[in-house]
Image (cartoon, rainbow, N blue to C red; front, side, top):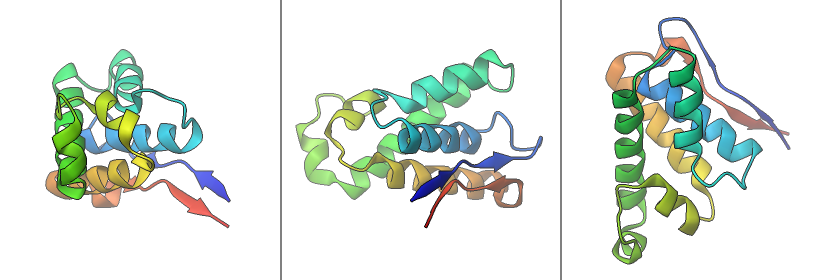
Length: 121
């Protein structure tokens, strides 16, 4: 299988959805990444496309999706609002990051501005 990374129009660059899709792309292509949201956010913020506040919002949304999907795991994590802690215990972080990115895109009305990352055969 091959992974095709997301694409975003100028309207979506720097959005929470963009940060989360970049994190999902990183999780898919570099599974050893300890905190893909942090890494993706730093890159996007350094490029001047986003603020740290949007990076924090991306972390909050992804951790909420993870806690909702895995409530028993949430009970075992010391701090459930830290994506790096979730990254250590999840066997498949990509679907959570992708779902969080989709939610962020819907909230911001950016569905037509982001082509999601995806796996192909």
